[in-house]
Image (tube, rainbow, N blue to C red; front, side):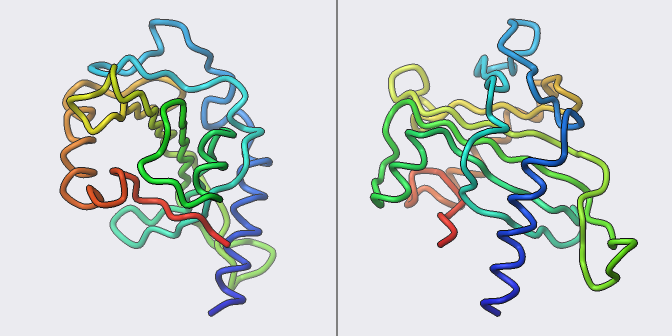
Length: 170
């Protein structure tokens, strides 16, 4: 099991650095690229952030995911700080999982699906546990209806972990 976890962590680090612009890298912070409700954008430079943890999502999503964090997030994770401090930004990158053509037992990233962003600002986002949310496909925010589901899911499932699903991978 430890080898599988290590392999997932290594694969996630590779995915984060190798997937390129398919997930909207460098989308910037233009207002037209801001998420409805929250005004969150894909942060510049997130592709260079440190890995928080990889994840493998089962069906029906069937995705490989990697969460990266800015320096504020990484420091909080390492220190075990909850709630996360203002200025924390987490970015989840997701791809369809496909079988490696070179090594059949391995799953590798296929088509990019989403980039999801969480921004901690306890004053600006007081009504949603201090977090603003953004979900993007091809660098563009999804519709308002999809953004209305973000906080409800985090509130129902991970309220006791400051509304954050991802745990730091050792």
